[in-house]
Every structure is written in structure tokens, then in C-alpha cells.
Image (tube, rainbow, N blue to C red; front, side, top):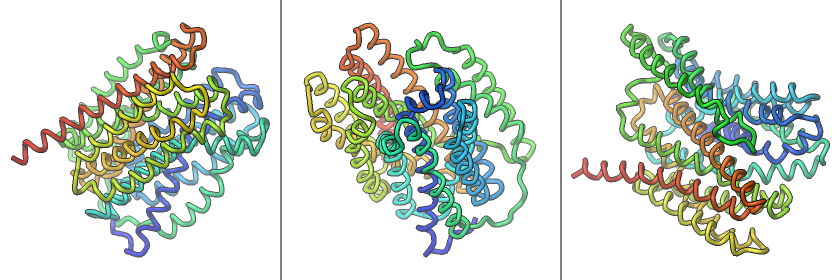
Length: 470
């Protein structure tokens, strides 16, 4: 791929980040709209779960194949197709007249999001070098952090504006004008691909990897909130592992035949990539869960409105945005040490929240704001620098597949964290006769444990790197 002309690269980045923001926002924004969806469409618990899980499943399954498709054909074409699919399905979701219609539209939305996101990291790898690449990934990290944190607030605003009957439709319709503008600008600004040798798309590898990803995610996203983890179909994970083994064997055979594989197997031998992959998985397991726990505590436990709960979480988003911008400028100087510092700040902020919550009676948002800023600032030093470091040694020709694998790991991590934390939260709530403080405390400590796991991997990478330099 040729570099975009210098005066359009940052415009192209804005288009990429806008599209990525929409797709990641839809992971969390729909949660605050679920009560009005339930009443407006008379949806059952299982239908509501499909509306939520269908998006995450489709998103996670498509990421790696979409990254490979962009590497082999054209990132611009795949990105634009993803935008069309996502925007159209958002309109269909907003116009849904029954739960089945909405669930089908959400699955299609997930496909569109999965097509878009790997191209974003691929474009950044190709359009930027050195410090500029780090700054671009810093903005990408800020986008990831803000989209996740601001989802409940924006969802609350839209539901409030539209009312109980139509507010949930605004959550989906808001994507349509943004998607149309992004598509027009993408056609104008995104760099075109050079025509190179035609590569196989490895269809068998796509099917094996997609099936394995589906089975890994299925027991994590299909359970209802009050359902215990033990009742989920964990046996399918064994089938998933067998499929992953078959996938690895197939990829080795396919590579020996001289054809391009879905996943570049050499990535496994890159220490920075594998440790960054594990770190991102563990961090997202804790990071995504924070907002669900806070939302449940504030709305169900304290009676906050969706808007008030979202506003309470804004300090995290603000801290994350500032730190991600700084992290993009500092990552090439401090490397993994920057990520380790960020993880420490996240742990300090969350432990502070855990210690403070049992002693709060009122003005909870005001008291938690400083701690959430600290945790958010730390998070901003984790996401974008980790992406930069993890992809730093990946060949730009495989940037789409490498970025797709990284984002798939993050999605799996998010699903693991949400499943475990929600199960613990509601189990504690039942055993304590509705004690939301005790439930939040238990859930917060689990999120901290995930972040501590990420910190251990960060320290291993940092110490190993220092020993190699001696």
C-alpha cells in the first residue's frame, strides 16, 4: 500500500477513528437502552440476551478474517464495505418492529464493526512511521477508552430525549448520519492499495478460526445476568480448543504449500506481540467490567438515572483521553515502562474506589471523580502504548491480521471479564439480600485481579527487555 499524501493522512485517520468509535460505542451504549427495548418491543429475557450477544459474537468472529481480507485485497474497499454494512444495519435496528428483527440487525451491525476495526490499525501501520505512528495509535487508544466510557452517558442522553417508547431507536439511528459522512470522506481520503500479486484468502483457515472463536465466546455472552457461570455450556470450549489445534495444523500445511495463511504463524515467535496480546486480554477483562459494575451500583443500587450514571463515569473517560494523547507521544521514549506505570495507576484508582464506596452515603459521583480520573489516566497509558508496542515488530504487510488478532483477544478478554464479574455481582446480591455495596466490592476486586495479571505480564516484558540490553 502506498502512503497517503502527507496533507490527507491525518484526515484519513480522523475517518478511521470516527468509524472505529461508532463500532466500539455500540458495545456499551445499548446497555442503558435495554429496559426501553424490553418494554417497547415486548422482548423476552432470551431475546434481549441475543440482541446484546449477537453484536459481540459477530464482531469477534469477523475481526481476524477481515484483517486478512484487508491485507490480501484492499483495506479501503473492506473498510468502506464495513461502513455500508454498519450504517445500513443501524438504520434497520432503529426501525425494528419486533425483537427478532432487532437481533438480526445487531448481528449484521457486528459484522460491519468487525470489517472496519482491523483496517484502522492496518491503516495506521501503513500511513505513519516512528513518533507519528505512536501519536496516531495514541489517538486510537483514546478513541477506544472514550467510546467504552462515554457509551452509558450518550445512551442515557438519547433515551431521555426520545422517551421510553422511542429513545432506544435513537441509540441506533445516531449512527446513520455519522456513517454516511464517514463513507464520503473515506472514499476521498483513505489511501488506495497498490495492485500486487493475488493471494489466497485461506477459506478453510477462516472457517476453522471463525468456528473456534464462536465457541469460545458463546458460553461467555449467552448467559443471562442472574444465571450462574456453572450452568453455561462450557463443554463447547473443549470443541473450540480442538478446532484451534486443527486450525494451527492446517495453517502450517497451507504455509508449506507456499500460500498465504489467515494468521502469520511467525507472530507467535515475536515476544513483544505475544506478551502484548496477553496483557491486552487481561486488561480488557477488567477494563470493560468497570463500567458495568458502576452502572449497576449507581442505577439499581442508588437509583441514579441512566444520564446521571453515565455522567458519574465521565472522569474516567476524560483522564483516559488526556493520557492516551500523552502516551502516544511518550511510548517510543519509555516503551513498556509507560504501560506498567499506567497499570499501577489503574490499580491504585480502583482500590481507592473499593475502599471509599462502603463509606459513601451521598454525592457518590463527586467523591469518586478523583479516583476515576486516576484510573482513567492510567488506562490511557495502557491501551494505545500497548497497541503500539505489540504491533511494532509486525510486518506492515500483515498489519490487518495482526491488529485483528489483537482486537479479537481484547474482545475475548472483555467477554470473560463481563461474564465472571456479572455472575459474581448478582450472586453476591442474592446472598446478601440486595447489598449493592458488598456486590460492587466483590466485583471491583475481581477487576483489579485482572489488571494485576496484566501488570505481571508487563513487568515480565519490561525485565526481559532490560536483560537483553545488558
